[in-house]
Amino acid sequence: MTFRPLHDRVLIRRIEAEEKTAGGIIIPDTAKGKPQEGQVVAVGPGAQAESGKVAALGVKAGDRVLFGKWPGTEVRIDGQDLLIMKVSDIMGVIEGAAASQKAA
Image (cartoon, rainbow, N blue to C red; front, side):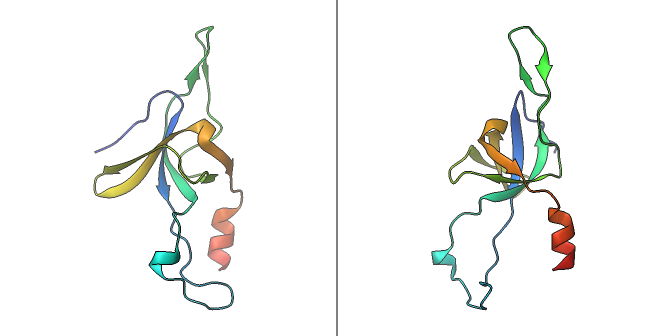
């Protein structure tokens, strides 16, 4: 099944945080918070202005983004836990994320 968000909404898959700190300490599941980083899976066409024009969104599918602690709505689509949120809930796009992951 495919899902297409409407208006200025985006569909995001959370990226799980590391289970170890830089010093090698393993973080138990009970101490971990929900990750605030994710990958954009799908985007809506954009917000419609009063003039009727649709303003394009600043993110695209595949972007790695940072968002707040309690954003949007959690949904389950095709067995995956995903988030639907407005693009205004996204704080920013993490540039060069793919390159830093390959190096690690």
